[in-house]
Each structure stands twice: as structure tokens, then as C-alpha cells.
Length: 172
Image (tube, rainbow, N blue to C red):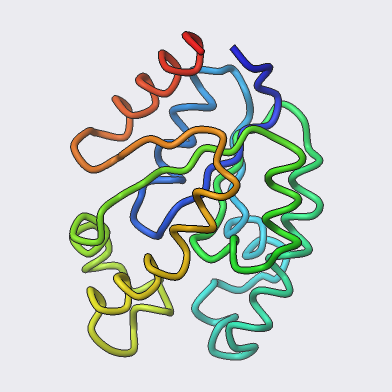
């Protein structure tokens, strides 16, 4: 089993990064953190507000700074935002500083899981399924590029996915 002191979860919105990350941290006896939660704590504002005021570029600047810092923390399971892979600096920090797990979810499942969530700024303008499909085409290759391990999250509860991850990682 790889030494897991820094586990980074990447994947699209609705893949379960935060929920699965909490269970995984519990199983691995590591602390859990989330880049979006950290950004909100530092700014005192929620992600949709940051997008409204600073646009996506402003949010990505904040995200890059948080990723640079949090990927150096030890004994952590870190959930990242779906767009974290857009910046090469983030991909480099994630891939170079820890064990990256890509939580894969189909577009259909992402659509189902996010359909009532108003906290997803990118899904508020246009058809959410079409937006998620376009994001997946753009981002999936980047998730795969930095992933040390890929697991599908569609057919299982977050707790089961975390248990399977622990089993798979301890048998590698």
C-alpha cells in the first residue's frame, strides 16, 4: 500500500468528493479538508458570491493559492473543486505532493446529484446536463492525467465507495 499521508480527491461536481472524502479520512485515520470550504472560510463568502463578484477567474486565483498551501499539509484527505485541474499549477501540486484519486461519475449521475443544488455557479446558466457534459469533455483527460487511482462512484453509496477504496489501496 502506498504511504497515504496526503490523499487528494479530484473529479467532477456531484462525484462525491466531500462526502466520500470524510468517510475515507475516517477509515485512514487522517483529517479531512475541502478546498472550497477553506476558500469560503478565508473570504467569509460562499462560492456563488465569489463567482458573482470576482467571476470564475477570481475564484480560480483563490483556489490556486489554497491548493498550493493545502497540498503541503500532512495526514490529510483533501477534496478539491471540480475545476481544480484547469490550472497547470494545481495539477502539478496535486500530482507532485500526494496520492491523487479520481472519483469518476457519469454525466447522468452528476446531473441527478446536482439538480437541486443552487450552490453550483456553473450550472445556473443554461441546461445543467449540457454544461456537465461539456465540462466532462474538457476536464476528464486532466483528471486522468494526474490520477494515481480511479474509482467509479455511480452505483454505490459514499460509505461503500470509501470502503472499496481502502480495500483497493491496501491490496496494491
